[in-house]
Structures are given as structure tokens and as C-alpha cells.
Image (cartoon, rainbow over all chains, first blue to last red; front, side, top):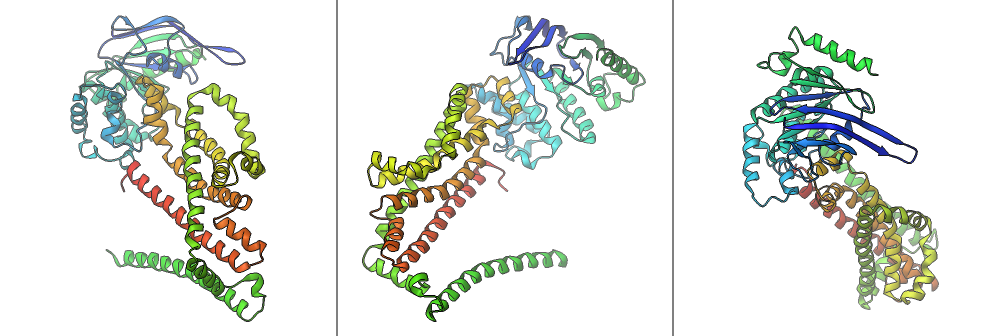
Length: 252
Length: 266
């Protein structure tokens, strides 16, 4: 188990009341797998992401990475935000090197690694270009490479395709899946899109409305040799969809 | 290149030429009518002066070695006021962005100072800073600085929350978030503040010179009106127009340079 949540709870306070956003949440992520978190909108997704990214600490319970408690300085979990969030004033090369730059790495080998990744995934000639010169799909790929450059163990994907139009979205999902598999990374995908989760993930964790807690864990046993897009055509696909849909509806 | 495209380009060039011609034409026409009205005494030139009289008086000032000392005095005050208020205002905005408590405490003061007609503080400034250049610079700073602080702070606070979250997930410090994200993201905002400050620092300087004047363009205008020498007033106003345009042009040039450095090199 590479990542494990044990009875994690989190409450945030405002002037009028306190809101329990996450309630005794427990689940685990196996190394090298792709796990999806689906929940109704407003299920405390941002809170959960903040907890997993090590920005805030859980009020109760603990998050374990490699069996050790996640600390605020851990850089082994990298976040890929909803929109690509590339900085317009930086070149693609400078954008993807943002992580190591923030961590003030003395060893400059990350530059070479970044170049290699850009080359490998078809962005080599765009290294010195600015984000505005790239297409939506290319920008998403650059954002993914930015999370890979720090060489994290777990990638945290925050609805990474939701800002794209439908057709691009399907292609980029395939693209991102392919790259994550090639780099042998573990990924945790937070999404509202049930089909997307089923097509990409090995396991789906269904969450309840706020306060978020685990309703069910569903193993997805679709043919893993297919691309996520092709998996949508599998016979069992609709059954998985039905199952997750029902669980979400019941918990409304 | 297709014939259609050629036609299109020609149309654009023509349009540009027409715009420029009209701009210059209107100015020339304005001066011409002004000159004629004064020459044929349709309106008393004693009151409205005339372009030829303005040229004559500027020549006179120059020959008496009086033109450039006045220009430099005003220019010095304006540029100093502009630079001090921009830098100081930005620094204050950074401090308020950094410290939430300080920002909340400062808010009502900023709002009040912004609403206050700054010229009302003129007499106080003169007493405190002395009736000289310092008082005039202080006046210019006072007029520019509040709006600089407010605009910069608003800009700092409107940076995309998701970008901040991305940096925080990389465990960036507050200083890093400012240097790598908040400040560079606010370059366009800074430029628009600079443009506003060019205009406002002129307002502050001329107002200051009206109040405490021994030299400068504002002094010439006040002096001219007091001795009822409208030629001097008009000549000073024309000089002022030219100076303001030059300063605005400098900032516009700066904008171009910054844009090339900070965004797509298209």
C-alpha cells in the first residue's frame, strides 16, 4: 500500500458555523494503480485535495505515505490542477521546472530530466515557447510533465480534463493515462465524471455528500490492455456505470 | 499572396494614413483658426492669445534662459513624485498583501484617504515640508500613492486561487508565492498603475506649484494669469501638453519592453 487514509476527519470553521467536510474516511491505494474518487458535487473535494497534497493536516486520523505519516514538507505527492495553470510569462521549459525550482534543488539534473520528458512526449520543439502558443491538449500534457519532473510517487489529478471540450477530453485522457503508465506512477483521480473514472481506474472509491465518507470501493476489472477510450466500449462498462450511479443517487 | 489579401492590406494601410492625416489636420486647423481669429481681432487676442504670440513668448523665455530651468523644475518634481509614489505604493501594497491583519486594519484608512480631496491637505504639507520643491513632490506623492496601493493590492489578491494551491502543493513559502506568481502575474496591472500615475503626478505637481511657486510651469501659469499676460499662460499650457505626452510615451515604451520580456514573444 503506497498511500493510506485512516479515519481521516476534517472540520473547517466559519463565522456562522463549523462544517464537517470529511468524516472518518479510510481507503488505500496500491502502488502502480490508478484510483478514482467520485462523489456528488460539493462533497468536500477541495478539502480532500488539500489534505492529500499536504497543504492542510487532518483534524483527526492520519494519512500514510509508504507507511509513514504524511508531513507538510513531503514532496512525493504532486498535484495536477483542474485547469493546466501554466504561467503565461514562463516558457514551457521554465513552467515544467517550477517544482524543483520551488524546492530549491541543488542538483540540477532535473533540467535534463525535464528536457527528456518534453522530448519523449512530443513537446521538445515547444520548450522555449510560451503556453499561449500551445493547443489545449498540449498544455495539459505540459501540466502533466510539470508534475512528473519532481519525480513524485503519487500523482494527484484534480478533474484534469474538465476544462477541455468533449473530443479533446477523450484524447487527452488516453494521452495522460499512457504517460502515467509509462512512467510507472501511482495516480489518484478526483472527478465528478463517472464514465471517466471507470475508463481510467483500477479501483473506484465512491464518496458520500458532505461530510464526505467512503460509501463503497469498486474494483474495475475491464481489459487493462485497452486504452481508456476503448474500455468505454466494453460490455461491462455500462454495468459499472449503473452501479456507481446508483450508489451516488442513494447517498444524496 | 492573393489579390484579395493585397486589397485587404491596402485598405488597412489606407485607413492608417487617413487616421494620421486627420489627427495632424485637426491640430493644424485648430491653430490656423485660432491664429486667424486673433489676427482679425474677431476675439480680442489679449484674452485668447494666438499661436504666433505663443511661439514668440517661448522664444523670449528661451533667450532669457528662462525656459529650460522652468521645464526642468517641473519635470524633476513630476518624475520624483511619480517614482516615489509608484515604488512606495507598491511596497505598501506588498506589506498589506503579506499581512492579513495589517490589511484589515488599514482598509478604512485607505478608503477615507482615497475619498479625500488631497488638495485640502495642501496648506498642511506646505507648513510641514516648507514652501519649496519638497512640498510639491509631497503633493504629487499624496495624490498618486493611495490609488497605487489600492490598485496593486486588488491585483495581488485577485491571483487565481488554483495557481496558489498548485504552488502550496509544492510547499512554496509565502515569499516564493509572491516572487514566482503574484508579482509576475501583476505585471499588466503594474503597467496600468504606471499609466494612471503619469497623469496624476502631473496633477499633483501643477497643483503644488499653484500653491507654492517660485519656478516651474505651474508657476508660469499662475504668474501669467496674475499679471494678465495670457500669452504666457497659453504658452506654458502648450509646453505642459508636450511634456505630458512625452512622459506618457516613455511609459508606453516601457510597457512594450515589459510585454516582450514577460509574455509570448509574438
